[in-house]
Amino acid sequence: MGNKGTKPNALKKGKSKLTAEDIQELRLSTEFTEDELHTWHKAFREKCPNGKMSEKKFAEIYKNHYSTGDATIFAGHVFRTFDKNKDGTIDFHEFIQGLSIISRGSTEQKLRWAFEMYDSDGSGAVSRAEMLEIVRGIFRLAGDRVNLPRDENTPEKFTHKLFAKLDRDNDGTITQNEFVRGVQCYPSLMRLLDPAGAK
Image 1 (cartoon, rainbow, N blue to C red):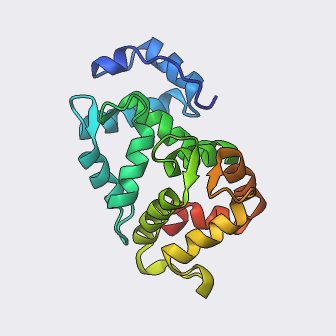
Image 2: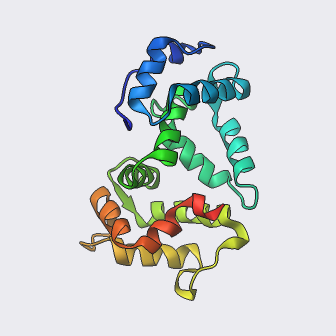
């Protein structure tokens, strides 16, 4: 259950079929059933016959899912969090792990994943500049559907408000614990930070 960090074997080699070992591994590390894994694997292989998804291909697929706004920036950040081994591509294992968290993970798992996306330099803390970059991506993704109060209706204002609520120790950065606890305390922030809500 959840992302347990199993080591993918045959999937890394670009095999076209899932083995029993692959299925067992992925059943333990995701929230998907065996049938769902087969369905997702087939769809993944149709889009990426070589077993690897480039950032460009990922962005194309993401844009199709969020057709009303500009998903380019945001898709790049999602891709970065899915690409666990940082090789510039996503294999099926990385794809299904990420998909499991964002589609079926607990609130805390989703928030920890979101924090990883916001923390683009991997420092363990989110700076105002990192937050602003992601918020700009969310606003572009939402397009003209952004309907927020006047004090939150631009990426800059929204980022300022986030920092006012989440940076508990006022050190100019948000730690993972500040982020997770803070967003859980403010359900409206959870809704606004969820790009799926912008669909």
